[in-house]
Image (cartoon, rainbow over all chains, first blue to last red):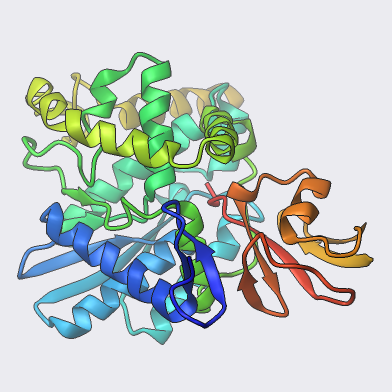
Length: 307
Length: 68
């Protein structure tokens, strides 16, 4: 069923086809409803927005800028991480810088090279490790540390429904229930004072919906995929879920909806997790030493061996 | 009909031959692309899979997959 006489730009799972104007209204209302439903943003905030320059984070910043203009007590600052992936991150960061300049949003960029002594490309030559493992650990570490130093009350990320469904299934396949307890629209470890609460306003939006929204709002840049992603476990789960979704529409929504029903129990069960601090750097950690310090030490040893 | 189709994930233009009255769904099937993973634009407008194609349509297939 079409929403009106205008040409549709998207078909929803429920069968309705929406034109550009009705889709924008539907999408924005879904995101703002998610923010209210899960109490993601308070009346007064200094929100950090994790910006990669890809469609998800640009869409997120575009929407939060609208919110901030309506409510001046919600201040926005963007934060980006330059991992040092040749031919990839430099392009997306250029898009991020352009967007922030145009929309007068302050942007802070931190790099692995400055913070950990070398870019990711070199880390992968020095250590025999899965790219997404080391990259994810360092990125989360830097985002949390810098968000706290910049005084953010919360850190908003562009994770969408597809990202979350993949994470839930990955954790199931790896029997990692504890990691699932850290998921959800309001993610992370609340019990740790050094942890900056992460929020995901695009939580209930599919990747396809985000792409259409970015396209009709002129936020979509040229296709750019991290060269390391194709080798990842996440990419295998992503492709499997997309094939399943094609045969059984609504599967990803079902994963999220069932997960949201058990999430409060998971959060209760793993409440005390990561309430400690790394003895080496003082950042939040589940053990005596955080994973970022463990990898940083391995890199140091690898550097010494190379000399 | 013969169509020139740009697929951003492969960063190249392909010529695809399809029967008359073919739709976007037929095009994606012929190219082996899962419709869940892309959106399609015709003459710079997003269109749905049931849309019929015509000769000389300017078709772009845009991947929805995130960067990483």
